[in-house]
Length: 214
Image 1 (spheres, rainbow, N blue to C red):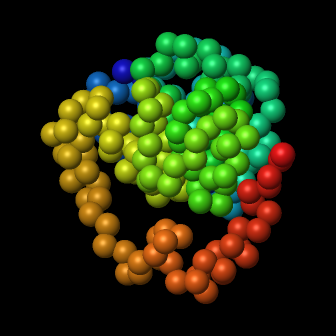
Image 2 (cartoon, rainbow, N blue to C red):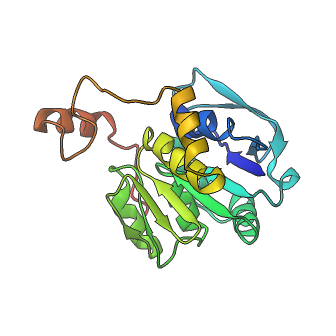
Image 3 (spheres, helix red, strand yellow):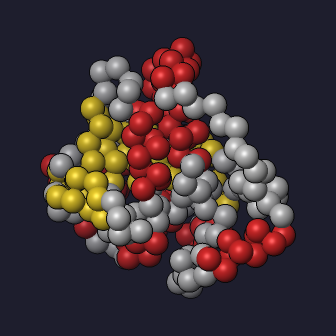
């Protein structure tokens, strides 16, 4: 089984590294980082780079497609090489997946029209312009399309996907190996649970990161 994780400049690291830690541990699985051109791709903070070992066209028919989000997503919304590859790969993929604002790229490529999907809370409403029904669920599955909410939700999505790919026991084995048993010190991980002043701070910090292109 081959899993292609898409990189582009200014991606959010955990969007792709979280799922990678889960999916790369599945038996008989090859995970390949792909980009328009091979080489190092730098994240949104400018302090970490991931090596894309293959260009998009080198991986034409992966079993699983995964695209993460990040502020660089705004530069990936026009139809072009990435969208063309996504549509071609989707024709034969078993699963087409996203984390955070990666769902906006899938939507802009025309792959989520008429479907429910989720994204980061700051960008959720933008899905509507592509004919997608926004969902506040952490992981949304519709047919072969799986989307995760913001950043850390990619780990939950990857474990969900692992269960479907290799069975519940294998998925739980991976969960144990990576010791994924979250006990956060705060209950501020969602818009519903975060205190109002924290929501305000986060909104200010992310201002301009999710531009509405309507």
